[in-house]
Length: 217
Ligand code: E4P
Image 1 (cartoon, rainbow, N blue to C red):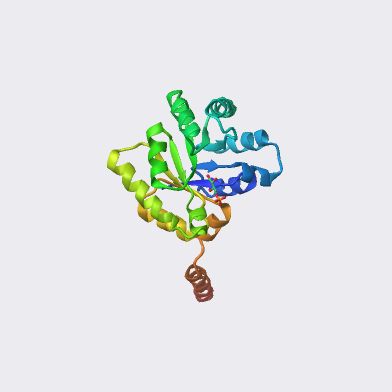
Image 2 (cartoon, protein in one colour; image 1 turned 120 degrees about the horizontal axis):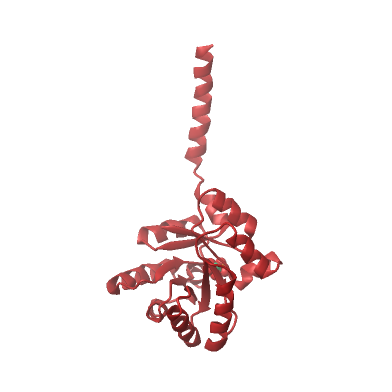
């Protein structure tokens, strides 16, 4: 399972990278806006140490505009994956960009049928937003299960990138299903290492080792 980091915060990405947990990065306009910095500068900084795909999102709504923007974003760095929204114009753009060898990530996906369209258009990644589905009372993880099954049925190459992750159980469930990638907010990654029995175990081992040390002297 690959881990992408879901943020535009360079320090947070660097921290996760130093821990060996960054196979790629996803950004979106809201995450970039939170940083209050020049987008191009942020992207260059991330690309200076992240080797895996870095998702950069277009804001055009028509296919022609998306393609133009995507080509430009793709020229910024060697490892861009261009995020394109799930619309018919988006699908036209994905088809063209995939024919040109540009990596795409179809975003704002909320149903298995949308994921089928993304795969047929030749998307590199499909991003179903599970947290936002949970928010409206639909179990987001159910569509991950369906999409993974459908892609396996037909041997689609598009990778399932589980997005809108809100807590560690989302990561665990995505892994159980066999999703290719989870894009994880830094706060969720931070929590994944925690277990009270680990803390208690370390404490007890250290206390016992103090007893061993006393025996030696
Ligand atoms: C990542 O590619 C998505 O843009 C992101 O996971 C969306 O998360 P949110 O629903 O918490 O905004």
